[in-house]
Length: 397
Image (cartoon, rainbow, N blue to C red; front, side):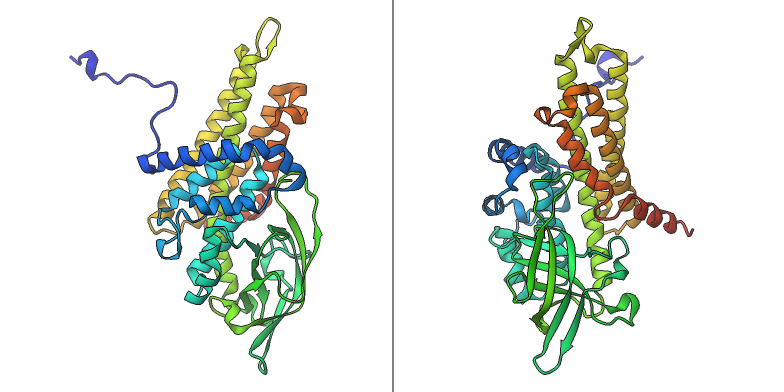
């Protein structure tokens, strides 16, 4: 007969931390959260109007937050991939989706291809100061006529044998950090007749003659981040500006997108959880018909459904991250995580507005901002439709 001490007691309030995280990860989590609450969140409303200042990068570089999973030899902290998940999750407490996105573009979209494919000279020139927060990076893929169809990119680079330079012409749009960046990881076409083997990446200084920051774009959400329309008119860069192999740019950028999608999925889960936590607090304080609205079954069931979707997305993200950290390249599962996390984050934010009622439509409560910021995740880094197609094709369809 089992004694009472051997019987597991049910946990209704959530279990222990996920197995991928250690005590060191939790200490890092607390540190980043404290920083976000103390130094970022108080300015969130202001930065919605002005965009967040470059000093955020400088400060985060000082604190070591921009190179958590980057090698120590380049000034990083030498941590595992999970440290980047912690950063993505805890920056949600800055209460600014635009800020979190701007930082993610710098740390998880522009830095990784430099680290993976760059020469030692390129890493010293761009990666090292980027980790310190002294140089700000952006990534140039999307064009006015080429979004999900990366193969349709028209920005081209022509080699000039006389000067051993490439001459770049074209345009990029929806470029996060485009107005503040010191350098852009630029996707170009170097051989229009070579198909997927005709693309090349370049590291282009944004102060190079011919780089034109044409327009600051206005968006539905992510107002705290700057988003640019860029033009490149006879921009000359040396042959040493090629990142990785000439003609392999398409494959390099497809590799980059996997990390971008996974970190984006983690941010979606964290954002959805943040919205739910705010809504639960509101539901316990707001009264109707003589009692808190959270005590009504309809509200309780809405919360239960949202919490279940968030937890399902979280487990999918964490297990996919575990595989990624352990040397796998699980494109199908990354696509699933990105798709599902983005969809549930928008659905959760929308339901949270509904629970808030009229208050949810007001800027004062911040839920409408979360919804506006979250909506981009179903478009950026691969639309829902592209993710579905990637997943479907992975089954041989």
